[in-house]
Length: 260
Image (tube, rainbow, N blue to C red):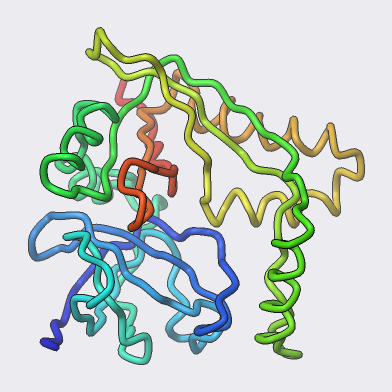
């Protein structure tokens, strides 16, 4: 299978998932700087990368990758994780602040999530970004299924690493609910959020906020009150499940300050 060298601006890191084959995986996505198109990089065992390879969001990385045999989505590439090299990081502390990020991300924005679904049906599009409207934030307690919990426990035991520990499963599932701008027929959407940052916020903030209700409200303040505030030009980044192409999830957000 042909190997390609890609330079990618990373904009998405999903929360780690346990895997029998890879111990754990993180699905990362970003923009291929040679084409300006979205690209999915998988599997990446992020905690098993060397410290010099552990990239942040908005890092530019160079990586060897190839098209997978079991994933026909056009944006998907299988990664040689040993080849990952960090080239740059676009911070927001320089004079241009968000400008460099926006120059790369804004040209990829779709008119709506409804349009992304139509594109998925027509051309197997599986990654995209759009500006929502009428946004709200919700969560639900994850119901423990005995059969699945036994399977999960077995997977956890199979890849337990004393140095790394196990991936902490979140007890809640978080959602954005929204409508699409310019889509008269839009009935509204409710998508789960699998952003690494939200998962990490839950893990760390629960040590500070012992009351679960307070913790959940703090997360809502961040992901709705701050990220989706009127002061931000925010967009949602979405991706689908490869065996369920109409099932999309929110992989991350892009929320630069609005221009004066």
